[in-house]
Length: 109
Image 1 (cartoon, rainbow, N blue to C red):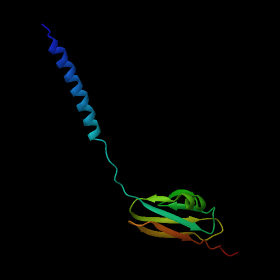
Image 2 (image 1 turned 180 degrees about the vertical axis):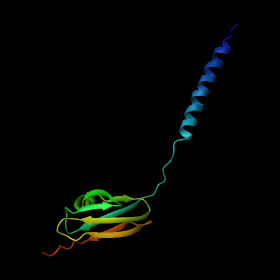
Image 3 (image 1 turned 90 degrees about the vertical axis):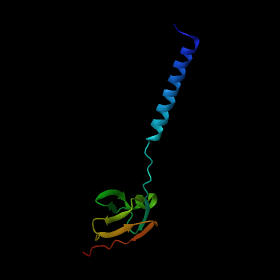
Image 4 (image 1 turned 135 degrees about the horizontal axis):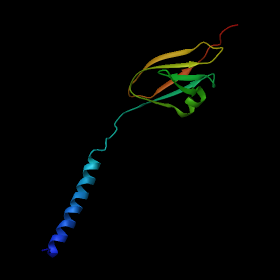
């Protein structure tokens, strides 16, 4: 025999179940606290190719205008263009932004 209260209890239990599932789902969303360090570059050969940790990023002009977000740690930066000696640097990204001035030297004929 159903009473008026049993329907309300069922609806109340369903509402509590939905609320708990939403709270539980929200509680397990991972929060990313990964810090990055800004790398900014300038150079004398705009179309030279920039590589960070063996990953090509594109032309120096593009990297200079957009910058790079590096995770903390040690990184190898390479800038290359045919007809120029390659430019390399190994740096430690910590807390402060990094500014690099790249001067490619032409290979003599």
